[in-house]
Length: 99
Image (cartoon, rainbow, N blue to C red; front, side, top):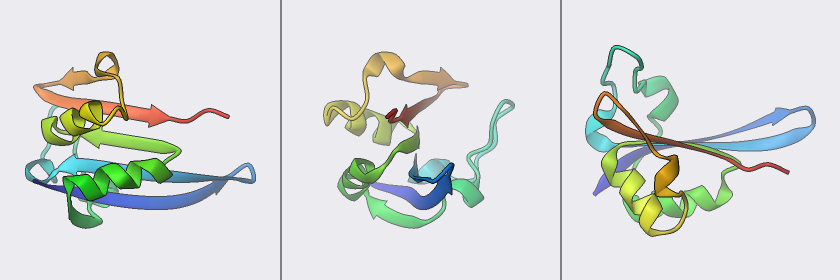
């Protein structure tokens, strides 16, 4: 199973954030009435799902879209299934590490 993954580092208020955006391969570029799974935000590398899960270890902020990446993240204990939202039939979850 492949997913699109993009990692960005940004500095905000002297704190470095690592933003990881991951979406199922088949969702990139799709538009829905309430949101778009944009190539600008998600298109980085096409990787296997295990590589993407490992990248989440580095994230301070993560945005996950699609049943494959969401289910794997739940299975690996990266997100709680109760925090997953469904928007027009597409699963979506966000992770924010607070310090």
